[in-house]
Amino acid sequence: MNGNAAFAIPKDRQEVTVRLETGAALKGEIFLEYVSNDTSNHQKVTAFLENDNTFFPLKVNSKSTEFISKKNVKYVEVALPVNPVVNYFSSRPMLSIPVNALFGDGESVSGKLVAEVPAEKARLSDCLNLQVKFLNVKTDSRIYYINKDALQKVVHNDTT
Figure 1: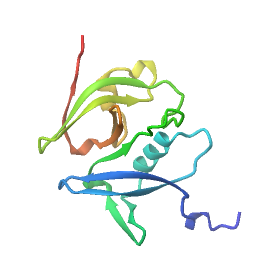
Figure 2: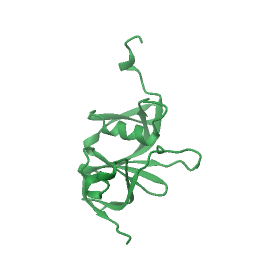
Figure 3: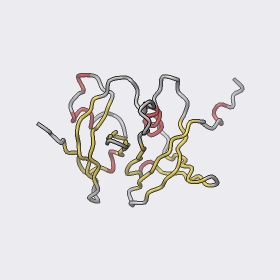
Figure 4: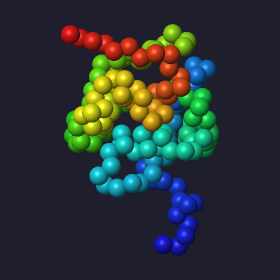
């Protein structure tokens, strides 16, 4: 290794829509770090959002990159692959809880909160209080990485 790894640009990219707290929607690509072959795209995006960096680059077109402050992100939206062969998630079991996530401006995201947690952390309150910055809410076609600081409340959609 030549010591220039700190300056290398990650090669994996993920198309996203970043929704800011102001309501603005920015479409572009984020740059994902290579971790290992066993790491799913979901795990890479989660690691990207959970790292300690205050700002992240968003390539908005072929000539422009904007640097976004994580604290001003309401959520990051990723379209799930339409090809059933492409698995966005890992093969590890994930807890899935139906929820409605409500923001202070009246917007909401309904879907299933998904989390890789042990059985002893299988309650919604446990998942909400994990030491992570973003919650993962999956719909049929998208996954939302929701900034917990932007939420007003989360309602359990009890179907029983």
